[in-house]
Image (cartoon, rainbow, N blue to C red; front, side, top):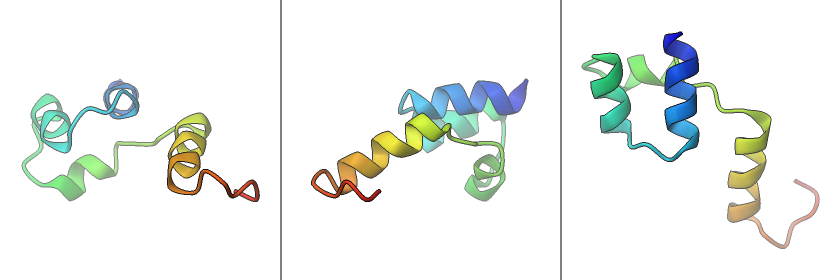
Length: 56
């Protein structure tokens, strides 16, 4: 459940501090291992970073 909850919060643009508080981790690197963005979330970020590049 922790993985899924953190993933949903992360995909809704929750801050790293919020994710850390919710999961009660003290180190950012410990929270990052739980956060697994979906393919859709990765595609959205990629389109923001390279809006004119259709290869990504």
